[in-house]
Length: 300
Image 1 (tube, rainbow, N blue to C red):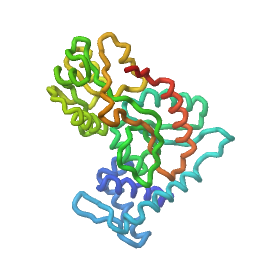
Image 2: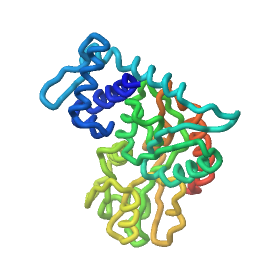
Image 3: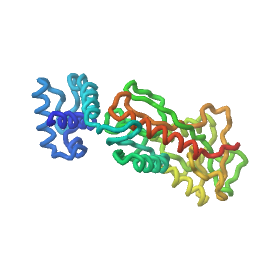
Image 4: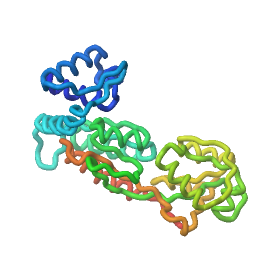
């Protein structure tokens, strides 16, 4: 059993690249993490890390063992799963979500837990790129996030729905169409370091419209509230379940069709092989139904 704990600590060190950061994740002291890794190396008969100061980076032997250790821990987790009746969900899973999916996901998980008392689900909020990394490293079983262009062979993507990109403006904003509104009013930008922000930036470049950039935030709802307060205009995805089209303070303007892809794709990312696939599949299907029920009406 101690070896299993050591292997989990190994994954934490591999992800963080230092004993001190890994220690916080696994709730141990740095000295305990260092002892476990020395013991694991002695048991396996090879060094697994290149150590330099505070850093502990996987060497060639460590990188070779990483997928095998992940697979071994998945097999162990399958053995630990409680026996269940047909159709019953049981066990522990960790699921991540971007902020815009969190409300629906939380309601879905709450309903599943009521229907399946042996099910234990931990939900973590975060940015799409961070959540994707946690799925790839085995810290999360699955995550609901924005699709990226880069695909990892070790993960599986299930698309759930798309959110149309739109210009959102106050009723007082000058301009008759999306281009005019963007050109004639202060622009409130979504964080360019995020996947959605990068997509917005690409759309703005394709439109070739001069913008008067006023601020940049990593909070979609805050940007929409600032638009309501007539601070400026913004370009955002029309969030699933939002009521922005029916708000008397807002104008929703759709983008020209000649710009290429005009929507962001939302889905579930998970590792291809993990011990809780039956649970993540049930969560994904329940969320798909909930998201379809909340899709906004997109009239041009």
